[in-house]
Length: 399
Ligand code: ADP
Image (cartoon, rainbow, N blue to C red):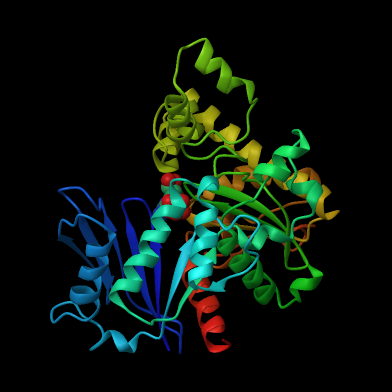
């Protein structure tokens, strides 16, 4: 069975064709700057990376190019015919309270996804463009929607309610939803397998530390708490997003500094976090290099980041009344040796101890805690596309 996984952003389209027999990636690529004069697509197959300049005006045309040239075309094609694809899995950012698991896409589901647009005005319309483009290009193809929010629908109410007038929750569904659910689910399942334990018996904190970053308390295989909120801006400070802060700052920036709502939004999403504090870069590699050269603000940004992540992990000891294992994943979690070390050092009081030699690795699936550590610590590379493909396969086979 071959599954095409699609992840559409407002100006991007990522695709992966996965052969489910051995869960191999046949080909993958990213279309960027869709709708601009300089759109291009980067494809990765057979260990090689190729960049093709191919301007397209919209997602429809981007997907058409992917199908005709990159999947079935003479030069780059990997399959003879689109009929070799058995199903398409779409990544959806926001499923609101409507979706607690992945679903087969029907007209009714599309309407329900549209109803979630106010909760994710930038993301959901882009995902819908991908679904519509697919419907045009591959009629009658079974499609499945996999939501970033679905895994967190098991949170108890006290962990998702905001301390606002209750009617805002009832009328407008203002609550914590959480994101990166596909990744938190994938790595929590995987760590249980690697530890050779039943997930039902484990209290796991998963730390998805990428450009966007969130933590999740996974108790017995279910999300019981997570750091992102109504939108992916809440929780821990990120590469360029602010995360949690005093909400009055928003009004202060608007009233005292005369910033518009859009300007404040942009500051909090694009100029804050580690970039904001360090003033150097949203990329930890640059900030670490600056710290090594003695830059104090770089050191402050990193310390702030490590401290916030450690504090959130400790919070989840309360949510789950204990922690058995901490998992690091995503770009920073998998690759930033010093960040993992810095976070774990702040948790020594809880009995966390890591082996510095073993921790000295990137992108590997490995236990980095010592045998004495009271809480186990693992690095587990995430694979959201594979998780989407697995859900898609299961739903399509059982429909
Ligand atoms: P996204 O949320 O966009 O998927 P990623 O998970 O790719 O982001 O994380 C991006 C961050 O991960 C970068 O800013 C960088 O700090 C870190 N990172 C990625 N790859 C490496 C690497 N090989 N070495 C060190 N840091 C890395």
